[in-house]
Amino acid sequence: MDNDIIIKLSAYNLFWKTMKAWGVTDPSIRVLPTASGYIRRAPNIQAQYNQEICTRACQVTDKSDKASVSPTSLEYQQLLGVMGIDQGEALLLSATEEESEFFIVTADKRCLRALANSGMTTTLARLQHRIICLEQLVIQLIQQSTDFNTIYRRINNAVECEFSVTEAFKLADQSAIIQRLQAEVDRLRNETGNLLVL
Image (cartoon, rainbow, N blue to C red; front, side, top):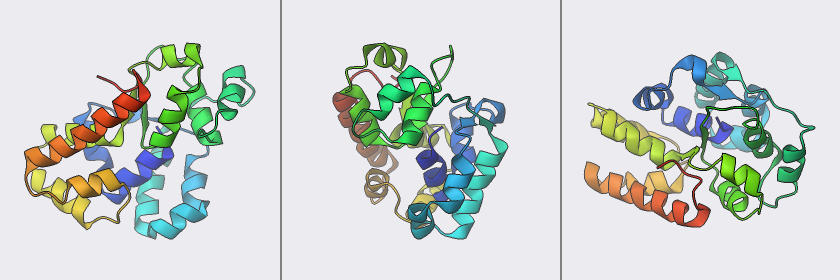
């Protein structure tokens, strides 16, 4: 799981509700070994999010298993060479090399676009329909929840951290919000080929 997803869902105070909506249990969540340190110390995170949000996010990362990463793998080195993919994203993507069952949950659209255009055919084939974006998470959360008002209130009261979600939740109607989020998913799918889950 990408650090951005953890911090954004923590900002909404909806991380565990979202995982439940997707049927994800605690032991199946894996994060980068550096996730807690990154959230605690990254200047951009500290500038945008208050201590309460960072604490919630670190509670998630501290409770989660750590992904097995190999900074010496050939795929990791190749991913580092792709403009638009940073070190953490390269580690997260390459950590799936030895996995048979996995999904990558990320809010980083820049990375997904770069990956889709990377020409790394073996990596792209392995990641086909294995990536879940933030908007897909929120759609599932809304559809599985019996308490839409809590979701609506928490997202609207949160610090703005994802433009597409903030804009969707300016709409008052649940179906209109889902349509707006789905439009963003469709746009991203058009830009990234078969990477997103169906």
